[in-house]
Length: 340
Image 1: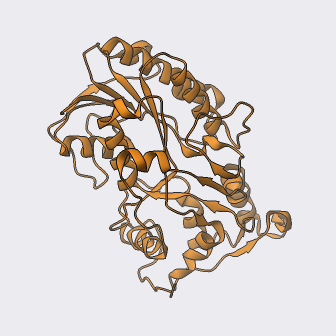
Image 2: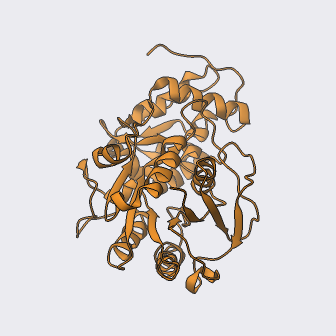
């Protein structure tokens, strides 16, 4: 059955590619944007066969005239880990309330795009379930997304929650329209500006290709009857070792291989002043992600959609690096593969 779907945050990386997937499947898609009056997929191509409306999630009813929809896919969010508290509350929590208000007026089901890292500081197996009370978070962004999930669950709107992990380039060619902020950590190492990398032994990051995430969100939007009330992890089949990522930059002959040290042994005082300043910013923003080992179950998502995440192995990492080189995001021209 073809659906009438509103996608918020459609100018963003995930929202734009979700729109592309839904349009390709024949659905009627309305893309809500705040300033940019165009919507592009992950390949950068501008989408046609799509309606565009201007809106702002911080306004009541998002500032959009009510119209009937089958599903509202709420991708709009502030993604900065260190954004001011008032911004995160206004956009991620208040904005979700306003989007729910709109969905209820439109008679729509509500698919909320959250993050797998609402797990906070928990390690071990993370179930596809509501965030437990008392969960501690590593930054205000995680906390705001968990709070927004709670708003959704108690609102009375028919809902499902999609939880992508760390979204990177597509599985086939590493293509990504906009590089996420975490990539800057590895860009600094590739440029030799960060020579030491604090990561706990066994720490992992869950990295997932954007095609799996956008395809998964589109599949959930199509199956909201079955998905209703559920939480779904859009994650890798296996996480990536943090140390593997750090050494991954050395897969390019021109890139230095950073020294990976235990966080307790890391001493920024011995670094050059410029590197120390960069490292302090990097660790302050992302450091906690290199000390944890959450294992995200995606059994419920796989059972419902039948979708399996493509391999996130060294070959995929090579494709990500190659694309970064091609785009000029990484400062080298020649890729040298390692075995394994």
